[in-house]
Amino acid sequence: MIVVTGATGNIGRPLTRALAEAGEQVTAVSRHPAAVPDGVRHLVADLAEPAGLRPALAGAKSLFLLLSGDLHALGANPADLIGEAARSGVRRVVLLSTLGVVTRPFGATRIAMRELEDTLRESGLEWAVLRPGGFASNALWWAESVRARRVVAAPFGDVGVPVVDPADIAAVAAACLLEDRHTGGAYELTGPEVITPRGQTEAIAAALSAPVAFHELTREEARTAMARSMPAELADDTLDILGNPSPAELRVSPDIERVLGRAPRPFADWAARNADAFR
Image (cartoon, rainbow, N blue to C red; front, top):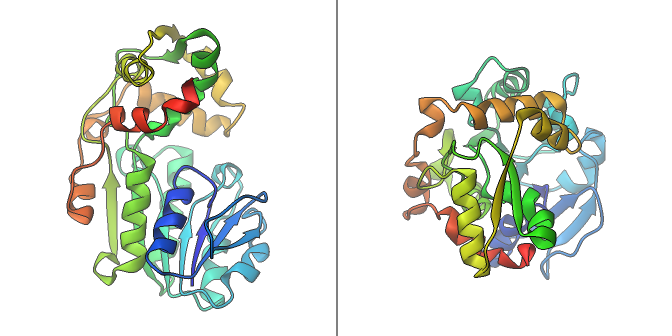
């Protein structure tokens, strides 16, 4: 059995579906009740209480570990989840980390994630670490304003990064969970091209076959909005990257193609598949 945490999110949903379609027994874990594919067991658990994960881990061979937002906050101790997995007899953990542990290793949230990576490596379990950059699905932050006013409001309109499709992250996660050859690897996951918020707006407009305007926010306006749904430290780290990406953060990684044997999907593909969210 394979346990997928964050199973109702942008990565967890396609990952759960891919594993079920591969014939695996899957337990989907989320904070709230949710629909899951036929044949998939669903359990409600809060990862902030690691002991609550024990019923899901009983009998599991592998775990996909995606931390909820509060487990990125200072003072959280997500390493306890690795300990629970080991005590439950899990053999393999695939951890969703972040590219920032490499590109900006001294930010507070990056230090904490690097420590979690180190805990996993030293746990004696089989492991793989996924380090995605910015997610294409972060564009869903703009969905309400596009639906209501046909406008995208974002900071740093002409500064781009190679955002990655969450479906590609899920596909790499599935490969790491199912194939022994990917264990012991840390994979940097990006899209195939650098794209700016203004360019993303154009792709959304093309997907809708309707004009969408772009309005540039100040950094402080963006921080205020982001801090409603994530720790302030993580919002600051994210804005640092979006506003002034380093050469390493602008690099298009070959790792998705190495694992999947195909190029990563461009943002325009994600926008076309998710156009209904913006209608």
